[in-house]
Length: 260
Length: 317
Image (cartoon, each protein chain N blue to C red):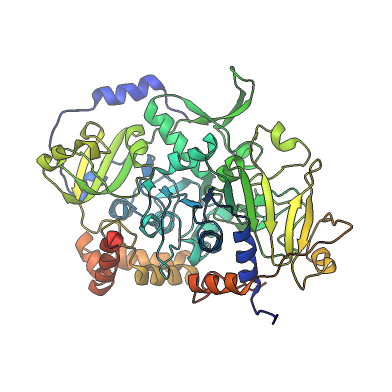
């Protein structure tokens, strides 16, 4: 088999799509998460339903005219239902939403995300745009997927601010805080797939992507990643996965890696 | 601060709730807003933004306004630089994901020239809903455990009296004024919007005063043909203003998409020069035009036509 050529953003989009099962409901964010959701629909999950925070259930967005946000008319194209924002987010509280798909400026070893402040929140170096629906999604959806570029400044021991709760301080702290459902499920980076240890809730390597090394993960992670004794590897992207992905994003508008 | 229930009832009690013509000029409608008011805006992000109302608030040099909205886009920059808003209550504040983090938002918040009260999207919606329901709070299962929680003055936690589970109590928000933009409304204020409803209905019911700008004023007979589609009732509306293209450069569902070229132009100016760039923008696009129509003309026929073709094409398949 010839080696396929793909960039790190394409790799993350494909790996993320693989986790979205048929018959489920996913909150799709704008950009790469949306691409992954549509990719999953076209590959193995034809009855996967996409929700948008703006109030949309089951849209079929137009390829080439993907919505740049989740709150505009392009999101609503060929949808089954439109709801108010409050009501669509409440569907999660009732238990109807299987997957949330999030990113953030920083993630820590317990899967907490920060999208509010860089530095001291009372005296921030950078004021970021804020949570949007991410806090609700991470508190209420059944399984959270986090897709991020793997960099030391993003994978930190402790986030500057918990905008979006993961397993908080680990152990039972998430449940103790009142968050009875959900939690981070997988973290997908350009180096590997990561899960969370059953008891401690620390982030652990599950599979290494082709070409990536444990050393590279250690170098690019600001906390001690749990590495299993026997390393498993991720199945490389297939020709079919890449072909369909590129049909969805022909200009690579959403699948171009960000400069580090 | 939570408003007293008795006082909120009193405001409604004093309001003329008759089926009367409420059509007025944009100037007179925005004249209903007082300095220091809490103004909540309908729509979300760059969709169905009551831009004409925001524009007129800046022209009338409103001061010390608390502005709340589900997600805040470029109109938040304009309100800050225009000296109107001192506090923004929202879940996310920047022009749009593809345009980066607002330099104006950063400047005002990092330099502590204004406040950014950050709620999650759902809990801000529940605040309006509690306000609309006439109850002091709604329990919810988000926000707990996060660092957003302790930064908010009004949010509380309790053990559920039925189950013992921990719950977040999301306090009611009853804005002084709601500004809403819609596609269709009659002279009495019966609003029949189209497309994404966002939080508009709850905001209108929660607020003490409601200003509706509309693409088109339709006859009451048209409303009565499909009363099931009336989203906001005449009884809570105080002003109706016909403002075609009243969201530009933002979008209005089924009517027009954003004027993307103008958005790109604005964002480049704002990101390039920060608040100074937005001052230039306000001079040119907000203070100089004689009226909203002149402002629309400045956005340009071609831009508006492109946006309109895209906007009307939503059901073209």
